[in-house]
Length: 358
Image 1 (cartoon, one colour):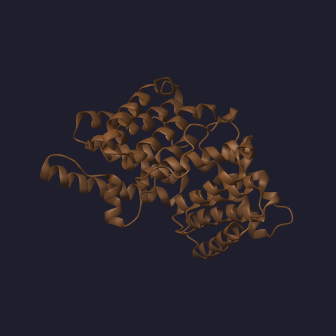
Image 2: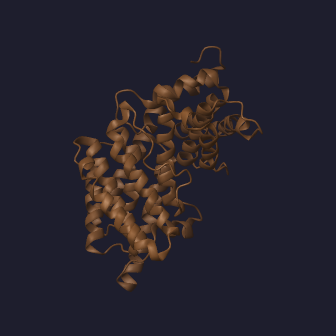
Image 3: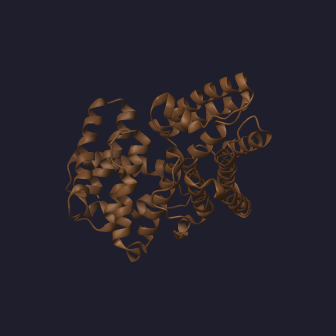
């Protein structure tokens, strides 16, 4: 892969290959899906190579505290984006979407503030290419990445998903354990869409989603890390649904139970598990609604362990945002006895940015 390329790029690609790809994968399968589907494209696309070098440079700069690497990262970012800005995109659709998703992941994990709406770009490429292009393992993997980022991004934006892929993306053989997660992502997108729902239809939509969540018991009954992760996400989805539907949160007993169950399932998954890459959203959702001091301390320790394992700045911001939300919500409950505060809106007000949930 590194034959014939500059030493700096070889160094960054080695970090991607040996370290970074394993930190961002979601799938608990034996073979890393990024290596299986994305890495082979690098040899044919300098732009994709630049996108991956961009991500690797950002991560190594965090590990080494080397500010010069941030400057290098910006150069690689520009090299990766350049072909996507041209009137005619010369890269094949699969490669173009791979570039966009590498940029999207880097933006979310490292807050690079590119000012580009990558999911809007993904939407254009997906629609222009047509369904046959994505009818392959690499296409399915890329659409899975899109559906995850689209659903979780809709939570942070408090708006409907951009891509609206729903649960229609097929399942790769190596990612079958994630089937329940993909259904949950589609459900999360539906809950986010309720923000723009007509009030007359809101109850019907809420009841439909509640029934759908109840049917996920089969997936949540998986053993091990997969079962705990799906169960935690299902509990977080209940919290999110009732916050959007009824604006109900702690100290309501139902919310406290969902939050406790969610967190306890997350705590059962080792921080070394690939599935922990899917944990920031349920952790945020449940942590924001817990008022139990011991659970809060375990949340603090969990976020610290996640960061020490991955060294992704998004996890540091997640911990800071959770602390801010606790302060705001505790103050509200002390003064009024109830909690009508939307966690995402609280961070938007305090920090003038969205929450990092990837």
